[in-house]
Image 1 (tube, rainbow, N blue to C red):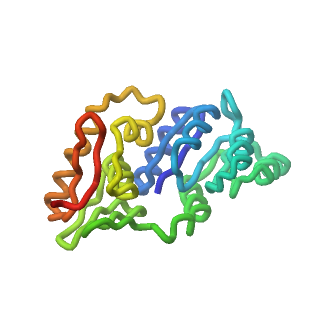
Image 2: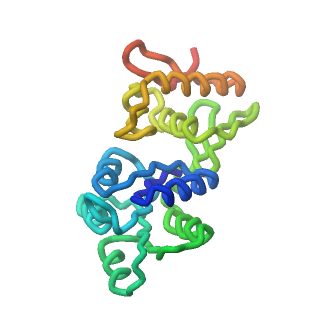
Image 3: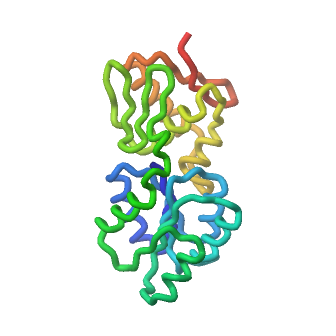
Length: 223
């Protein structure tokens, strides 16, 4: 399950992102409202954790903007403010829930589970060939066995399986997985493709990742 986490306090962002990833969430962390809007426009998320007080654009503005565009993604508002009026403002702007700082991480995880429950109930798993990818625990499996994928491996495999038989460029991988402002080079995509290919071979998968020269990669049935 993929989350966008918008929080300008970087130490808190790093700590919470680490906890979320340990609990099988894939997380894109951003630090201001404008970047959050850019990621929401270009990314497909199962949920958003949105701090109210952020530079460039506050959380309420971000929330109102995405709701005005018809984006129904579940949103949890984080705020240091505890007054009823502030909570009402967030909920009226389209938030699904709110959490007041400081908070316990167990409560944060419980609220994320609650707001995303059923969000992707129909496609909690992806299937292609003899492969199954479980979006809740990052497990890639075939009749011969299974692997629990690392975070970036999972995100790449999810993108490939959700777009099976379609060409995905290195730039698309970099943008969707490493982020719009990443300085990663396209060679990192090849490295993770290599990791995934080894796992597909170990699982005796009947699908493979084909490289298209100077274009990208395609997940397709093995010939």
